[in-house]
Amino acid sequence: MQTPIPCLFMRGGTSRGPFFLESDLPADMALRDKVLLAVMGSPHARQIDGLGGGHPLTSKVGIVRPSTTPGVDLDFLFAQLQPDRETVDTTPNCGNMLAAVVPFALERGIVRPQGDTTTLRVLTLNTDMQCDITVRTPGGRMEYQGEARIDGVPGTASPIAINFLDTAGSVCTGLLPTGRTRDVIDGLEVTCIDNGMPMVLFRAADLGRTGAESVETLNADTELKARIETLRLKAGHLMGLGDVGPKNYPKMCLVAPPSAGGALGTRCFIPHVCHDAIGVLAAVTVATACVLEGSVTEGLANVPGGAVKTIAVEHPTGEFSVELELDLADPQKVVRAALLRTARLLMKGEVMIPAAIWEGKSA
Ligand code: NQM
Image (cartoon, rainbow, N blue to C red; front, side):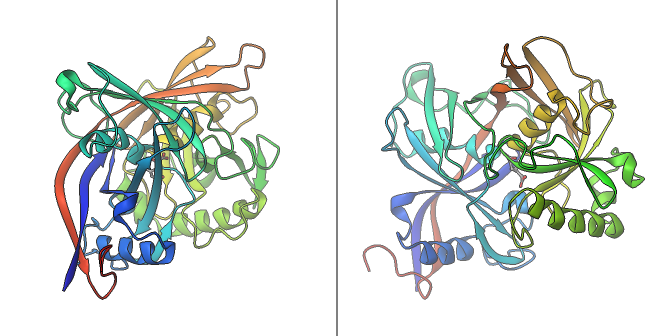
């Protein structure tokens, strides 16, 4: 016997995963997590018995509901699973999966299109973060085709604009959780920062790397990965996050001078494998470090002038442009971050899970 659960399978930015209405999943959180593990086929390196794609970027789940918060249209809960671990982590954000939230809600009919474009306010429950998301809805339907191109995804699609209202200190207590723009851990200069994603930034050159290595080279670099994990565990305590051993953050980012006309070169570990591109809020956080005096990006980053600036964060498959608006009175303070994503509905139907795990709502 199997239990069917209504599900839309969606690409959000450079990530992919099943999306659910909260009301279609068990209310009990422990049971919900068991259901999500069964949906994805975790823990198993290839997730052969589920929908997961054998990589952290394809082991993500979105859960959506109409919001009851005044001024907010939708609540979004992101769950990070892992191929080979039995964990369901709802602590960090995912700005890529976030891009699919409004298309999902329109498809499921829990919100109404507003005209040629639809702008909705979304609250990410993981870190209590709000943003405005604009999608194209000509003729009252979600439009997926378009001319927008994001690096890491083939082809073009309809643009989805995300405007983050307040991202500083998402999981950490503030933007600079150690109170400094630069710390030294094990003799290595680092910047511990959280503008939507807890991250540790360090210069690739300080570890004898260029920061231009391929993802394959970095994933095979066991010496570097061991060094980064030791650093991550120590940084976790310094950032007030406790033992981050089983957690998916902080993300660890090698920074280097730009090599393709952007602001900064990056190679981001999320946290155990190297990202093929860079996470959305990871890009916002790295861009923010670029405007902070004294961060490890100083002397490497090429930052344009003005209170509103576009910072192109280079990554292994291209670049990620983040528009930052700085506080005129305090140019060290970012008041708004905006960026472009795309998303696409890939499949709609029911995902089947063994009834031994959950017998469903009506049982
Ligand atoms: O930083 C990967 C992704 C992410 C997260 C990760 C993300 C973000 O690319 O907001 O999007 O860092 O695990 O989906």
